[in-house]
Image 1 (cartoon, rainbow, N blue to C red):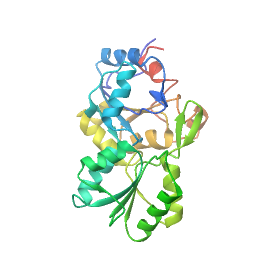
Image 2: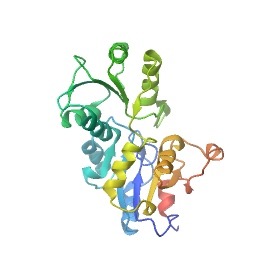
Image 3: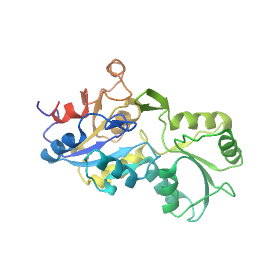
Length: 262
């Protein structure tokens, strides 16, 4: 099968959930897919809205599927959060976090303390141990003046069983409780993709963003002036593409089909 990629494309920004895997189940033969990507001479970075794992943890997950990459090729919404905190708040400031270890690691590595005591910001991401107490604490802090920051707006998360609640669902609950709109740092907003383009170090017209979700991946790529490809292995459907304007530059049943091995 022939690759669907335009010959001018030299770099890929790949989403992960719904493109490479659903939960812990790979989508296709990832070892073969990335061997083909290497044969095509493409440089790759991975850009995910999911803040639950660190880049090192994602690197290990990819290695478990037979794909070897460097940790600095992986950019998460937690990476964007850490950068935003460093640019806008004093080092060692306290921040309150609803989220998992990948988000917490990035925030600590950026020099911030995770605490509700005197928190200048509330950061909210995917948290599969969410409780009423966490929602209560976040609400009180934001209403007292803490800046409300969300990792990403994805209201659902693709799993082998189907769509489950995502970070956007938690953010929406806190938004409703606080009457406050958050600053969102993941796709489709620019922070995460700006970091990704910088890592690739290629002209924008030579970069293709590949994702499974129209309202975050494709919208984010289009907002950033990138070429976009939607794969139909995750959230968005072909029926939904029909209502989307402008259309993605490419639509493929899978990443394997996009690169020409399926």
